[in-house]
Amino acid sequence: MSKRLNINSAPALVGIVGPIVVIVGDIAASLSIPGYSPIRDSVSSLALTSIGWLQSICFLAMGLLLEIFVARLFFNIRRAPAFHAGIILLALCGFVLLLIATFHMDAPGAERTTDGIIHTVASYGLGLLFPTAIFSLAPSFKSTPNWKNVFVYTLVAGILALALILGALFGEQRGWFGLYERIIILNALVWVEVIAIHFLRLLLKQEPKPQS
Image (cartoon, rainbow, N blue to C red; front, side, top):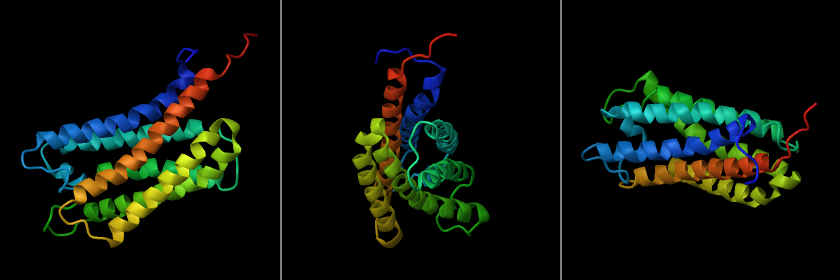
């Protein structure tokens, strides 16, 4: 990378940092709770433990960082059909992450609460929003010369995300739901990470504007 990092690189760096924060936070929280199984127990159930604040902070951070990243992405991709819908939906994913972090799931066997309902709707809604958003952005990646090489990967990530969320809605993952949920999350986080790294490389290759 021939150029130095600068303020223009910050949104791409934000996109790189966000997924790492979530992954490291999940690992740290999972290992800190005796008896907790990341294979059996859901990610959301960590919020009900003594270290639930860590998970909430990680998801809040990811939501905010994703909003910053999407705002900068808006100005660097050629507009193809559904581009604006894709940008709006991806920004909405960041907002839904904030909801998930703020409203926690209900404890197993407990009475349903408004917080728990919001959390459940937001979680499954996010699972549907993400593939829709990146499918909408895919034509713009294809039509932008510097972004063509992430087009196929975006389609693959979108298909996988859609298949996984449909499996969560209509399938049975008893005994390994935690692992299944983490695969869903990891697919989305890796996509953000790949796009952010690609974006950073493009920003660093840009020639600086001449001084007036």
